[in-house]
Amino acid sequence: YYYRLFTFDERPNYPSTEVSGSMAPTNPIALTYSPTSFSASSSEKGFDPSPLTMEIWNASDRVMAWTASLNSTWVGIDSTSGSVTGPFSSTNDTDTITLTFNIAILKEGTYFTYITLTADDPEPGLPDTVKTISVMLEILPPPTLERSPSSLSFDAIETDPNPDAKIVQLWNGGSSTFSWTTAVNVNWLSLSPATGSIATQTTDMSVTALTSDLSPGTYTGKITITADSDSGKGVLRQI
View 1 (cartoon, rainbow, N blue to C red):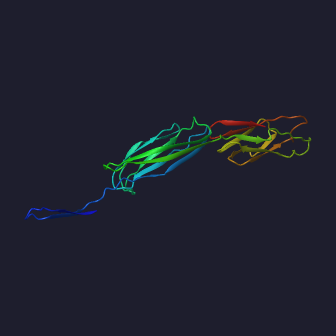
View 2: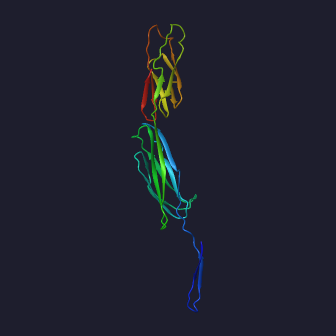
View 3: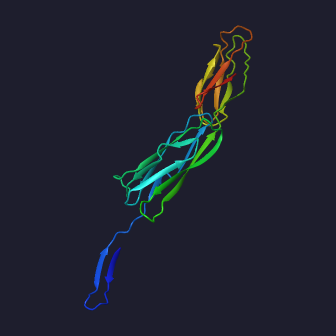
C-alpha cells in the first residue's frame, strides 16, 4: 500500500506539509494441512491399523502457532501443539501429527471422530483459524474358516486303484485374510494343497485315500485345518 499525508495550518506564513510512503499489509496466517481426512480399517479382535500422519504448514509469511485436540478412546495423537514459519517451501519447516489406533475394545461397526486444529493469529484484530479433520475407522467381521463338506467317505476294493479324490471347499466367512495349514492323523490320506491363504476366494482342497497298503476293513481318519488370522488366534475345523 502507498499513502500520502497532508497537514494544513491556517495561520499566516505556516506552510502546509506533505508526507508520502508505503507500507506492507499484514497477511493473515494461512493454516494448511494434509490430508484433510483419515480412514482406516481392521477386523474385530485384529491388529491395530498402522499409524497415520498429517503434515501442518503455514502458507503465509509469519510464524503460526497451532494446537490440536481430540476426544476419543480408540485413536490418539502424539502432538497437541507447535509452531511453523512460512511461506511453505522445501526449506521451511512443517510439523507432523501421528495418529495411532487402539481397537481392542471395539466391536464390528463404523466409528467416527474428528481432530480440532486451531491456528492462533498473533496480529491483534485478526481471527484465529479453526479446522476439523474427520477420522473414520471401520471394524470388519473377524476372519472365519468355513469348509464343506464336513465329512468324507471312500469305498475301495482291495487290489483296485485308489478311489477318486474328493474335494473339500474352504472359504472365509468373515473379512481380512488368513493362512491355513492342515494335519492328518493317518498315513493313508493325502491332501493337495495342504496349506494356503484365503481372503475372499474359495479354495478347493483335494483329498485322496491311499488304499494300496490297506487290508479289507473300515478305517477312520481325521483332517484338522488350522486358520491363523490377523487376530493371532487359531481357528480349527475338522473333517
